Image (cartoon, rainbow, N blue to C red; front, top):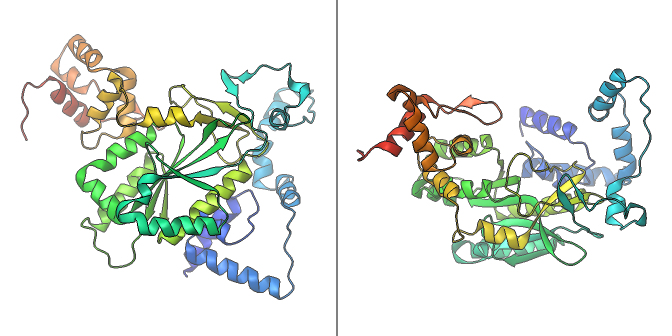
Amino acid sequence: MGRIALQKALASLRRYPLPLASGRDCIVLMDFGKTICENLDQRLKAYLASGGQVITDHNTAIEAILNDEQGEHYRELTKTLREKSKENPDLEVTELTPMAEAVANNDPTIEHLPNSIGGYDYVRISSPKAILLVDTGETIGKTKSSLDRTLQQLAQHSIEYEVRRLSVGDFAWIVKDDSKQEFLLPYILERKRIDDLASSIKDGRFHEQKFRLKQCGLRNVIYLIEHLGNNRQVGVPEATLSQAALNTYIQGFTVKYTENHHHTALYLSVMTNFLNNSIQNKLYLDITGRPFSDDLPFCGFPSQTIPLLAFDYFYKQSSKTRFCSVREVFMKQLMQIKMLTIEKVNAIVEKYPTPQSLFRAYERCPSEAERQRMLNLPYGPTKRMVGEKLSKVIYHLMLSKQYTT
């Protein structure tokens, strides 16, 4: 195990704000692989056997971290307060009872409050529990034997799961409200064995699948790539696979590599436990029916509000056979152009949502040169440009009467 790898893992661990009970739990952190996690568990076991003690009261540990005035997390948490104090020195700060806990417990003291916040309805969940959903497509065909082993390992880790049909993705997590209605947590996982990834790149499914994942309404999309072992030929150069994974990461996906199906099951079990811990005493907001955009509430592990999507709505909206709007069909057409990423397509259809609106914009341009440059638009958070070359390609695609290869 290299020194640099250990230094990266240690830096990642220091940035994580919550206590971890074992080396196995570190698998969700960046730069932590199976080997490091197993070594940590072995060292922890030896330490406990020699009489060492571990703090098991996580609340005390978390409180110590958050109240360390010299620590990064304390400074980040109090940054806004310090700025407000400079603007208004007389500002008085009082401690508030967590509203999320009151909502979850149906506290009568909040009955006078509105049933929504920011236009989103509250979802009442007294005892939230994340249940892992496994797509039925993962349990048939050539991957059935490995998936059966994965499900057995999930059961060994006491992870509650259900096998059902998912219209997009391979794994997701649901919670049930007090009326037993099912809502999806804002996390979805697409599992790709390395040979499946190679096949999807060769037959063109790779970009279409990522497009559907980005449009499914769940903000946090995890793209898990499972290795098959050393010296396995998959028909695509390793550099191509690495570039595909890097592009996926740049496009806003969380990319996770696992060594085999056992490692995948371990990751799923740890992720499920983390979700169960993170959804307690929070505000749950129903975003069902809202168009997916950056304006939707953000959700990470530390978030105090959790956006939920009704499972039935998700299933219908993500189905390949559902009714598609002209905008969605237009986006799928543009996605077939090489080097035209999801972010670039979104920037184009935001300004020109239909082919007709694009044609009319071309007609208003006074010159051929301006028409060819018209779609060189800024895209993404960095506001980089689509590029004049791609703009010209789209122009010829839309207005040419015949095409040459």
